Image (cartoon, rainbow, N blue to C red):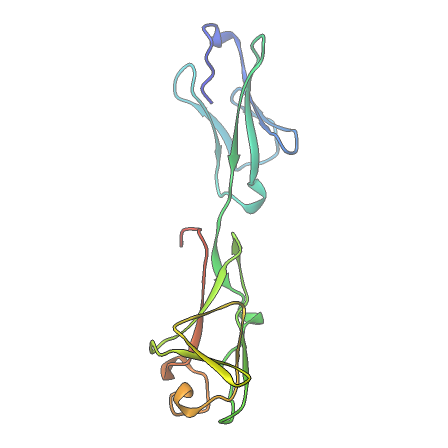
Length: 180
């Protein structure tokens, strides 16, 4: 917050979470019962609201106000991104399928923005998706569910099990959040 006032020393800065109207701090005194918040200033007119260990619920509009007449204010939106992660309890593990059978693989994820699920084969071979009489060879498939029908040995790497060591499909999650 960079308030522009010649009489700044007489005025105080307040930090407010605009969407909830909660007063977070006045001057250097944190009002809210949140030990992760602090306020610092490095000179007479630069004030900073610091949030340690940012959480998803910290997302929102923040406002800094200076009690001048008229009041001066500045707002900023804090977007919290969460790197993608696979929800293993809801994701398919290794499965056995007889040749000519079908398999439904599920890959569930969490993160913000919502992760995009991409299926690829570890050996770089195409994923063959069959729809009735039609089949497509895809370098990758998208979506939480990968349905494979009329599975052949060549798609399985010579065994009837989807396992990473045999070039079977694996899922990857990605979004715009930086990896940690």
